[in-house]
Structures are given as C-alpha cells and as structure tokens.
Image 1 (cartoon, rainbow, N blue to C red):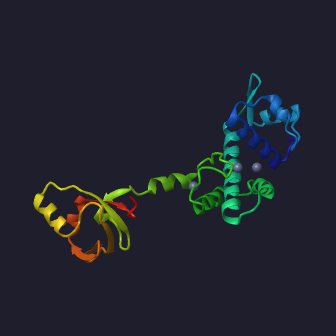
Image 2 (image 1 turned 60 degrees about the horizontal axis):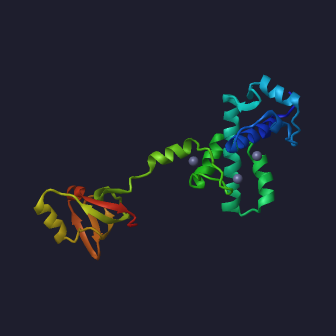
Image 3 (image 1 turned 45 degrees about the vertical axis):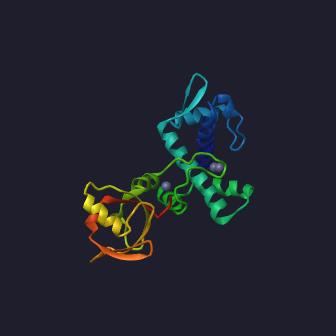
Length: 220
Ligand SMILES: [Zn+2]
Ligand SMILES: [Zn+2]
Ligand SMILES: [Zn+2]
C-alpha cells in the first residue's frame, strides 16, 4: 500500500465530507495534497475495497464507509469536546481532532458522546453520525407528559390535565387542590405516596393519581 493507515483514513474522511455537499470525482481526489493522492493511490484504494468508481464518480464501499463514519464521528465529537468543555481555539483544535480520531475506540467515543449529551452537530454545524449510545438515549427519553404517580421522590411537575370519568373522584381531587396548572412535588412514593400540591402536603392513594397527568419538571 502506498499510504499509511492514517493517510488512508484522511482520504476516506475527505470523501465522506465531499459527499455531504455533493459528488466526489477522481479529479477531486487528485487535488488532495496531504496525503498526496495520485492515480496510483486511488487505484490502490479501489483494489483494497475502500472505494469504488462508477464512471468518474468515487463512492465509499461498505468497508470504507464504516471507517469514514467512525472517523467523522470521532472528529466532530472531539471538536465539540474541545470547544464546549476545554475551550480550545479553532486552529489547534482541527489538528488535535484529526490526530485523535484515529485512536479512539467506539466505546471511548460513546463515552464522550454521552458526556456531551449526544450532540447532533459539530461546532461548524455539520452532522455527527450517531452511535449506539445515541440510540439508547433516545429510547430512554421519558414521555414528557405522564401520570402523576410515575414521578419519583424529589421530582416535580405541573399538572396538565385530569382525566377521570368519575365525577366523585374528580371532585375529590379538586378539593385537594389537584387541578390543572398546579405545581406538584413528590416527597415520597412508599410506603405512602406523599406529595406537595401548591403549598399543601398530601398523603394520597397513588391509584387515584393515575388520572392526573403532569408535565415533568414543571416546564410549561
Ligand atoms: Zn480529521
Ligand atoms: Zn466541525
Ligand atoms: Zn451518543
């Protein structure tokens, strides 16, 4: 092979970036200076199944795309890390992101991604390919509005609506001050369900609260 593994990485990364904004032609690759891409290099990448060419357009093979996706993810997560957490200036950031991306494992990337709250874009506004951690996080996102008895101890919410067909139950809830718009805070859930509604502390049968829907954290 004419290029080192890291140089191949850089070429695959360039192709990925080129494809984000359009198509990549053989002539575009030949313009890459670092590493120096020649006709021979391109043919070598084709022989090694990193890329393929249809007419004069260059595409990543599945193998090439997997490598590039991980590199791009690493590069852009590193950018976020440097900008948001470490506040490193732009020029050295690019260099460091580019040297880090080759040595970070999927596990390390997912840890950084989780630390940063699964960002979707790099500081330049370019898409960060999601990892396994992002998909897990999406599944774990709680529904915004939920029955009041699903709040845990210490959690707060704002009552959005009360849906009960039993008038007596609705009247009782209203008497207790459990009405739409009220803020609630759960003090404990066991052995008794104790919550604060407005300024009043109440111990209540949690089953009754099945009909009371809150927006968690009280954001309206
Ligand atoms: Zn890079
Ligand atoms: Zn960026
Ligand atoms: Zn993630």
